[in-house]
Image (spheres, rainbow, N blue to C red):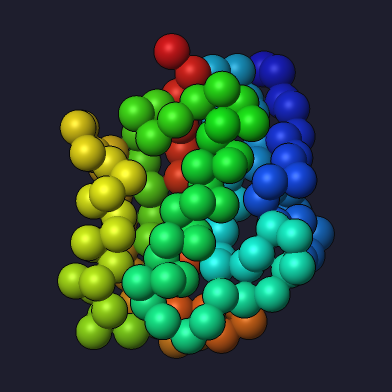
Length: 127
């Protein structure tokens, strides 16, 4: 087993004792991404659509750092602070997974770091 810690300046720095992502053999596991700006570290404004876009862009940056894209994603886990945001989140999510969407779980949680409205983690496979 080969384990590599992945880090890029194009995604927010970890705000705790974890890595942005980890590669094990042909799999990439990202940590959950919340809607933080990679440069300022500030949370995107309190709007589900804007926060969802920021989260997906942060994930895109992690994928691109490994020369991957959303077609390589095999599983996502999505966390929403309120299931009332499910439809709005899905609209954004669908823009990133246009061909063959991955397996997915979506759960509502009591709260997320920095009071974010959404967090998403993923698993991608190197072809």
